[in-house]
Length: 475
Image 1 (cartoon, one colour):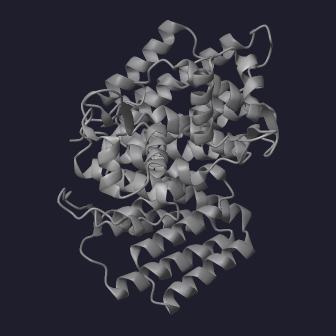
Image 2 (cartoon, one colour; image 1 turned 30 degrees about the horizontal axis):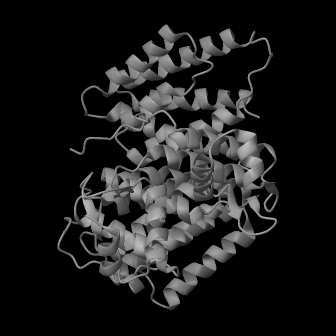
């Protein structure tokens, strides 16, 4: 059994992180005006009252989340930018690698997202978009491109039919990670799929598209759930081979050399088994190993430092040191990306429902000892703290972690941060808080009791009712 690394183990933020969050919050408050200048370095130093070193570290954090970038030269300064979805997916991939997320966990998180995408598509019936998906299926059949990577690409196209930025981001991230694992032979279909199997699978996708165009929500979602369940049963993680050949820098799929070096460094860390606090090498040694310039190596190191995968140790015996990636940075960056994509309250609830209903069912069915006790304890802590309306999410996080699916637990934390930002508690004097607190605590207790009873259907009904009610306080 893989021991989960708790997402709740997050250290107090450094000053640079606090400044970075203030900058990001300003970008969101301004409506994310891409290209607008937030201020020169001198302006920002005066505004935040910090040292140049702290500000520059804050800027590096903001550049990583994609909220802004520093424009150099005369008239330069911090400029609002569009977040990079690729960098978020890379961060998620690194964290998955570090905690050892399995193919089963990825599928358990991806299936409810794909079911949600076809449910929403069947409601919307976007005929033009469905025709584009059909064209991709025709192309796959005509070119006999029926690889697992091709089907994962098809899944990403179905996810787009949801018109929900959360579904697209999370499902797309998992698909990209799965593609890389298939390419590296770290996942496989067992028994191996034949050409006939692949054509049968493609036919199921076509029937799902038929149901979407017909507006048949039940037919589309049932076929999708059955399809992913059948594939899930045949997917396996391959035994990890630390002796496998490292990738050549020109085989890593990225056009930028620094990104390819970062990928190769990460691959070396994976093959070594994430040996925390181990020195990978000094700067001269790494320059020689990867045959790149000092500037390229340092850019590659910054990419991995942003994700917490490495840190630089100064002085004798120093060098590039393996460290533990922090999920908090992913939660923040993914939440900001969805803010940029103008995620709506309804879309937030739809993604939360897909993920948290799956989580509550898994928690209720869990054979792991202590899951129900942990959820009940979080409900009791909520009661004793007396601040349910302000801290709405601890019970939800406990349920997500109790599911045993770490991707779901991570994505639920992203959604919690967004919901917190969009929650509007009426009455400035706080007179509505006691009522909201009582109703929320009662709902949490009933969900926890259903989990403790092992009744997945009852837990699902209660969770759906609770999340629907949450729409009333979203803006």
